[in-house]
Structures are given as structure tokens and as C-alpha cells.
Length: 250
Image (tube, rainbow, N blue to C red; front, side, top):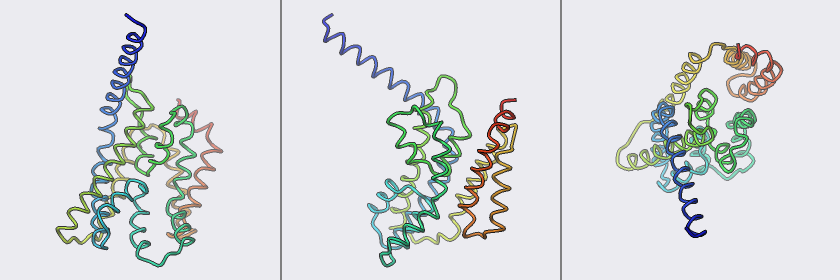
């Protein structure tokens, strides 16, 4: 076999092997994302219907779901698009609503190390639900960890985009009352928290999170509690990282 033929065959074998790794990772990731699928389809559809009711095109709806991909902020953005242009207000509002994602990214630095080109997308796709899944699940034995995390993130993103498309299309044909439908996201969070609680023997991180959040809600109120909650949770978990890890390892 000539050298060129040997190299060509070697590359083909590498591509087939890589494809097998990706396919297995995709199949392994899908079952974990089914709860998110349910929530994102409904909530994404509500967003699509809301955008349609305000007169925005399906193309803009889908584009925002692709490049913004921040559920709560996208709902707020529907009104921002209709209001007078105020970049400072939009910046501060976005920072307040999505500040928690800064902490998500910081806490995932170790987990995302070594993911190469996938790292940028993994950071971009860190929604609340994806973050919860990546924190609470481990890939099955024999599944590439990096591709598993990538497909969990990608599938969740696709669910949101699909829901937006469905909402935009259906909203153009039928009138809907979307009041209360955003509770789907809260219900989804409760399900994820319950599954994570049942899968872990030690619940100190969850108890710390719930306790600190409740305390900040009491002292700072429902509008301003999010950022101090995140800061205090990160500080406490950092200070008590060693004893928490020892308990988890027992």
C-alpha cells in the first residue's frame, strides 16, 4: 500500500472511531435531558407565542433563541425591544437577571478543563437546567465525558430553539393566554433538585444553598436577593470545600 493510501485509510479509520464516540455520547446524554425537553418545549413555545403576539417575526424569535439563549432574559427582552433604547438600563437589567451565570461558569472551570474547542460552547450553554444536569450527573462507563457534556448542552439548546419555533408558528395561527405558563420552569427546577437530592448521600451543599437563599430573601427582598445569595453560597462552599469533599468521599 502506498504511503498516501495508508494515510488516507488511517484518517478514515480515525473519523469512524470519532463518530462512534460521538454517537455513543449522544445516545447516553439524551435520557438525562428528557426532563429539560419537557420544560423547554413548553416554555420555549410560550416565548415564541409571546414574541408573535408582540408582532415580532419568527426569524427574530429563533435568532434570539440561538444567540441569546437565556430564558428569563428573553422574556424580559420582549418588552425591552418595544421600549425606548436605553443601553445602560438594558445592561444593568441583564446583569441582575443573569448574574448567577457568572458563578455557574466559575464553579465549572475544573469540570470544563481539557474540553478543547468545546469549552466555549459549554460555557455559553450554561443555563440553569444544563448547569444542574452537568453538576448532578456523570457519564456512563465507557462514554467520553467531554462529548457527553457537549451533547447535554447541545440537546438542551435545541429543545429551547424547537420550542421557540413551535410557539412562533402556533402563535401565528391561534391566540393563547400565556399567563402562568412560566411556572413550568420552576416545576422543572423542583424535579431536578429532587433527583439530585435522592442521588446524593450528603446534602450539605443543597442545605447551604437553600438556607442562604432563604436568609437573603428575608433580608434583601425578592428583587435583590439573587446576587448576595450567589456570593454567599460561593464563599461558604469555598471556605468549607475540604470538609464537604471529605464527607462526600466517605
